[in-house]
Image 1 (cartoon, rainbow over the protein chains, first blue to last red):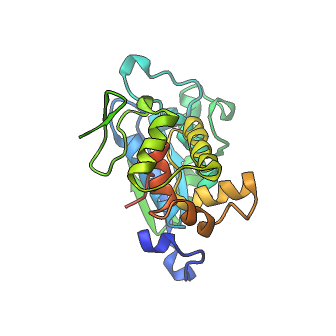
Image 2 (image 1 turned 60 degrees about the vertical axis):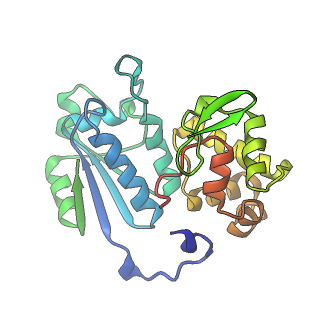
Length: 134
Length: 110
């Protein structure tokens, strides 16, 4: 990476770009999955890949506004999701069924998301080259 | 591993990044830069302060591509490019500037 960093223009062709979808299913704290997936998302974005991020099941809580982590003694990393736009990662999906089952709405999230049904999400998954689930 | 700075011991990792962001001060930044042969001028501070603001907002250090893009947005193309940043921080703007700014190593920097 160090050498590539010095180049203004990468010699890049479309063949080098794969479609990645990261699927978040777990609550943000209590396990390391959410944070580790977020790091992978950032790294994948830094390598100019086509990245989508999906939130379903308890994963929808990862991007909920107003997280207070003092009592669990972990860093609140929810502000980092707002950095994704700067990495050109703008395809963020929330599964409607998971969101509604938890009494949440799009305005409860720290980032703009596209709400999709489970069936639509399945179609999006079918279009990916790589799916990583956490 | 620790720096001995102003009578205090400040922990750092194997690459010299301080482990507690709270230990940072502008004087420490100058001290860290001196260790690598750099006297910090206004242009260095502009980048360091930019990185600290970015970290406060997003809780991460930006990847180099993102730093360049955001610098371009904030200060224009003369400063938002790799060449300018590498002249200020020869060992890599993300790595070296982040170190002086007291931030963790940028995510995705191998």
